[in-house]
Image (cartoon, rainbow, N blue to C red):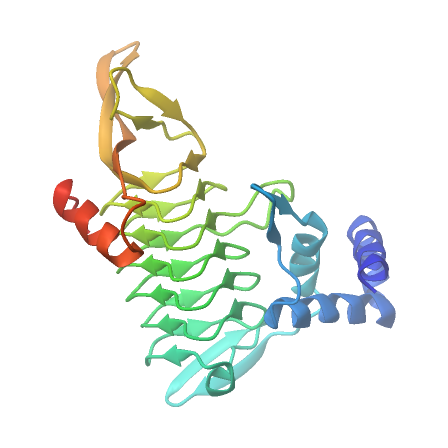
Length: 272
């Protein structure tokens, strides 16, 4: 089944004229249904890493040209889009406060809470996660279990270029207010990002807890406590401060997750 779906999606990707044929459109629809139900994922954990399913991203992109613009209403609100909205929250066991919106094709697991927020197609949000007020989860982003996305957090989406990896936030992470994670950055399990931390693929993530700095890019190690920082960079016009992120400590392994989070926030005076 999966092999056949992949074959049809790849063929339609190479030749868009195939979208005129029912079997190719049905394959795309099937992939979106399985994304909606959590049976397929754009990215999935494999041992200690993550595998990216590019063909599923292609299916999401191909879904748009086979859809028609339609007007829909939710109470007094009117929308005009190609995409339906999720509407089976009671059945899923998901709490959604008025203003919380998720597009069809996003998977949202049992126990998730959505305050007024937005979740795009292809995203995967695992159980017990809080998507707080005005937080956004972009297309194909992967959010783990019991993650807290604080108010105004921005999780970037990714559809094109097709080889780009989605943002991945692993289990138990805490992201402070207005933190932004984009361009395929991976935040490993139980890490803490302070308020206003901005992580892109090129952002220097510098561990300053030891005698010499250790630099990362594109990944925040597990249980790290991260705050915004800056470093001096030389330009033709002079030396200027460039944003970075600083790892200033670790959550403790010896205590439970809630206690270790509270301890980390207090010990390192991290704004959230």
